[in-house]
Each structure stands twice: as structure tokens, then as C-alpha cells.
Length: 228
Image (tube, rainbow, N blue to C red):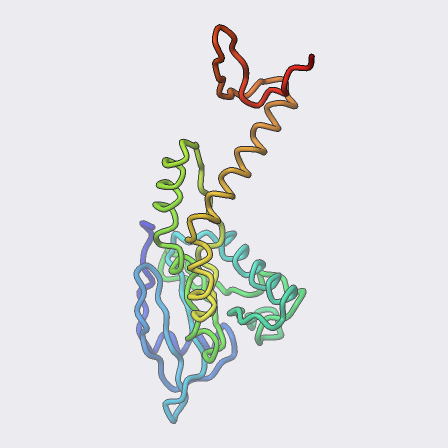
């Protein structure tokens, strides 16, 4: 991202939490972030209250809404799965943790820093501090897919959707091994190839298959045996 990183201080984060989400805090601690700003809001006794995230000015609001919609869907399908849900903003008149059926647009608030527009989200601290982006668990996946595809002499296009979705760190550790298990990946690549071949057959394009040669006769390897 090339947009401006939010230029706000700890006191600004406290003020934003109160103004945009109705969350009162006495202090804020910068948790550090490469492109955004993330703050832990704290009470008078130092206890954690919530996590405030302020986006880079280049962040696409549609992407944020897609992430929120995905989190809401996961929660609806499996209520026992721990997923970080953003709060409803005060502008909607009913601030608080997201509920099933909420409009993702209501789960973010706008903050302007001069001409730069930033989107602000607030998460429950207890859960948010355990969450990590899905991308953290799949760092080596693109390279592994490429290596396996090369070993199978297949052409593969990898597309990962939802890398920024927040996932419980324990769950992330559990899914990393299955995602990067070579035999499972082999099967998926072969299945994709079979589907592509079937599509080619239906369209009239004959997929290339190996031939075996017997004497002076050539025969396709997958051809049925001749009848006598």
C-alpha cells in the first residue's frame, strides 16, 4: 500500500473510541502495525477495554466490508468458532459487538486526517488480542503450490481470498499443517486438471493424452481394448 499511514497519537485513539463507538477508555497503547495503526484501549486501572484499528488511507472500504461479511457468515455457520467481529459504530444509533444480520457498512466508521480518509474498526479486546490475519498461517503456501505444480508438470493459478480475515491463533496453527500437506495438494491439483479435461471434452476440444506404441501400431493410453 502506498497511502498515508494514520498519523494519530495515543490520546487520539482514546478520543476516536469514544466518539465513533461509544467506548470510554483512559489510555491507549500503540500495538504497532506495518501499514495501519492498532491501539489497545485501556481503563483507569490499566485493564484492557477494546482494540481500535485505523486503516491505511489506501484501504478499500469494499474489502473491509467483505472481511466483515465473511466473519459474520462464519459466526452464523459455526457459532462455536472464535472469530473477531468488529463493533457497530455509534452513527447507527446502536453501538456494540456485531450481530447476525448486521450490515457490514455499519461496522466501520470514517475518520479524516486532513485530506486523507481512514476507516476505523473496534474489536472486543479479549478476542482480538488472540486473533491473527489468515495470511500469517499461509506464508509458505504459494511457493509450495508452485513447487508441487512443477513436479506434476501442471499449470496452476493460486488465488487466496480473505488473507486479512482475523482467525484465532490456535486455529491458525491447527490448519497450517493440513493446508501445506503435499499429498493433499497433489490430489487437489489432479482434481482441477480432471475438471479442466472434462470441460475441454464438453466443448469439443480433445485434451492431449499420452500414446503407447506396440510394433507398428499406435494406441492411445486410455483407449479401451480392441474387441475380437
